[in-house]
Length: 285
Image (cartoon, rainbow, N blue to C red; front, side, top):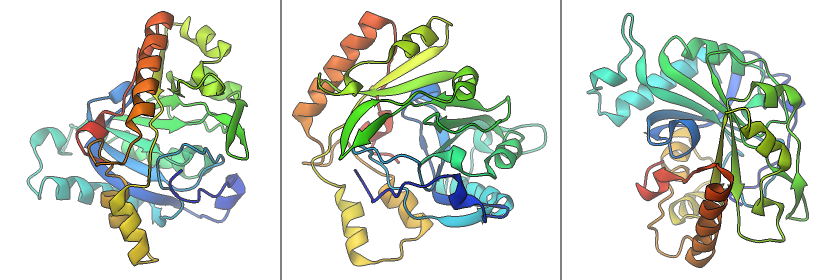
């Protein structure tokens, strides 16, 4: 697990006013689920209501942004990516949205009470918006926003016990489900719960990703945290978020091969969509 990942509830954000607590904002290639392979602006919200031992993201720290400030940050990040020369498809102008996806992830985005007004704002500017949630907290997000529910398991002493059932409203609203899977037959992550098989019968998509196993924390993130205590949003966005499949010694390749082969065969047998973190292979955030 990267970071300490303090477990919090919605009460953590009761005094947030009109702001969102943001870990990182970055422009990249979407690696998974609905928009896999698409150019996308990612916004990672800080804090989570779970503490998964295999989690490969940092989301402890963050900065508070109003919706207007976050909108400006998004514009800045896109402009910086293209060195100020934004191609037409990525521009926002009268009558035209940016032809990309905006993906809100975490942590757990549904914890934050100002999520919905931000999504409503972005739906006027970005062609597609998507939120990924573990499904335990319900918010009535806009109809235009795609909801990907990524259920997780309860844990005890770092060991996964069983899948947590999503909130029924989330499950009914979800446009797709996304699971992680490992080859360890003693882990609940070695299979998909029965209710997800039933969900798939509705014709909605179920994505399954092999669990990546790391030998260590990415070297650049480790060095950054060793050198300073106060890490900026730009550092979190450009250092923490860039994880490369090709970094020597980073990944346990034997365990990953087992997980990838097992997951692929599981998807073929059960009619699910095999899903990989494509951005890692391109060394992108």
